[in-house]
Picture 1 (spheres, rainbow, N blue to C red):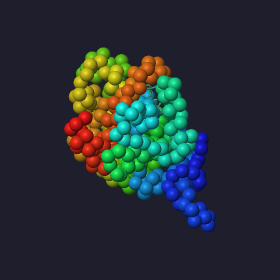
Picture 2 (spheres, rainbow, N blue to C red):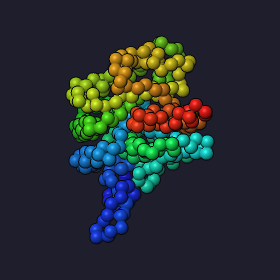
Picture 3 (cartoon, rainbow, N blue to C red):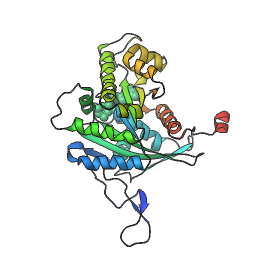
Picture 4 (cartoon, protein in one colour):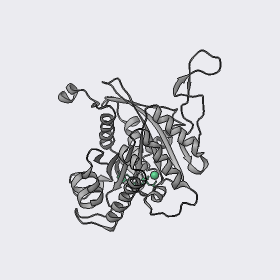
Length: 317
Ligand SMILES: Nc1nc2c(ncn2[C@@H]2O[C@H](COP(=O)(O)OP(=O)(O)OP(=O)(O)O)[C@@H](O)[C@H]2O)c(=O)[nH]1
Ligand SMILES: [Mg+2]
């Protein structure tokens, strides 16, 4: 678990009396770590530095098995595994060397078509990526933070025990996102046993209330964070839906509380369906890049106010 210190790729700077600018790491905590091994002030300082450098933090929020890690894996698959000859509108760079960046474990798994293992409680992965459109000057700087569903349950209230303080630490990390609009991606999966649209299961009810509790807790405990943060509803495992419907109808029927939250506050909320591909047991038979492409393009527009593609490209392609 590398804790990356000074001395590698990242921003430019000078060291010692050497007048030649050298590349130095910007952040101490990068990639995969255990929260109880991290010094709280280090991680909060690191988040603050990322915000100061204009990085937009994206934190998938969801119960165990919601698809948080695979959502991040799929964003990385689009960034680094797409056929750039066919789809060359934008390019991506990891800010740190691949081995330290948190990207390696993910791309290694994807190379074998493996799904990622369940994230252990107390685990955190921080990945910094830059995305640039071929047609625009300004890159967007993104930080993805992956947490375990079991730890998220401490924030919804489902898991009352926080004797090791992990929940409190995560709350502080989320609260640190206040200085710049972070995006909490509320990941809620389609019920794997669903047979009919509109038939609401126990699973649906639980998902709806747990994610609503997460939002409620932020609204009550940290109203400023609630107002400054962007919430994006992401319906994961969209490929398992028995029949095609539009996402808003799905949300209205199967996650009514989230739908009310989404529809009452359209300025702060987006809603997207998401599928990483065809998953059978622990294998991704076919990684599909449509969802991550849509996400990256939407994100680019949110961050810059501009489409990845210029108008003439959109009209003629
Ligand atoms: N069919 C399908 N299955 C998916 C998709 N995304 C994730 N899965 C399945 O859901 C499982 C859980 O996904 P993860 O990304 O590990 O879930 P998580 O939210 O990170 O779970 P924790 O780490 O336990 O909190 C995976 O092992 C896959 O089997 C998807 O888009 N489609
Ligand atoms: Mg996970």
